[in-house]
Image 1 (cartoon, rainbow, N blue to C red):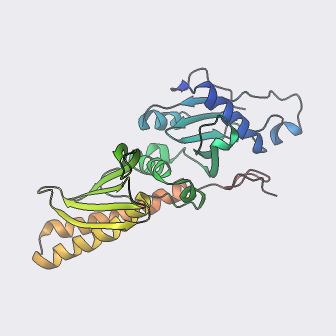
Image 2 (image 1 turned 90 degrees about the vertical axis):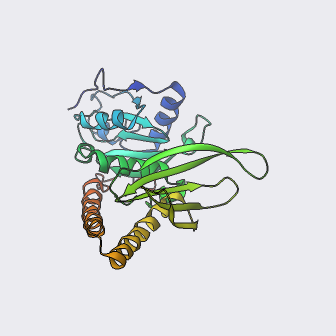
Image 3 (image 1 turned 180 degrees about the vertical axis):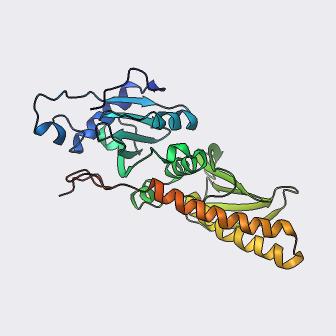
Length: 282
């Protein structure tokens, strides 16, 4: 049996986060007080909820690499929370913060993930977490948070911009790169959806744009298709060797992306575990 660590590489989350997550865990049969793990053994130690907060992607990755997790240990990063629901295991109940009322309803449970293997892959781990955070609540519910794997890891930033009404609106921005191209997908304060821009990294000239994307996550998928066309067009126009290298690179990245999806795919929880929609499975 695993035992709660006294130091797990991250500071304890603030009280409101601890309390709202502990309350949310009462909806999960494995994590609630006196849940499934304790029903057959009333003398088993009832572990406390120990929720930490990672301040960076690398700190989060280090958290998952430590292993031997006790049930109810967890970590929050940006608007995401991960709570271990198997004592000594690697099955993380994954939630997204959708409110700030200090209540269980602040959290949307949408996935059960295993991070033991993926945490050793810095690029793949980064893109999975960035995708989850960049995705909307509805995209997370539909499990449509995956980003295509390109040459560089995706980065997620936020910026405040003024909309037409004069209000400050926080907008999300995704950036990455592939070969000679820089990729940027961003929200606009006065419009629904997102804008996708692909530019030449050397000249900074805009070579592709699409202002009709549903979200920055869907824009990232559109970028993958656009990059394929750009690279193919470059090869056909002048036959430069760098284009062939880029095409090969994109193929290998697709293969790597498929492998990352397999290694980080949701694992089936034990019988009666909470499902992806946060409800107990029969």
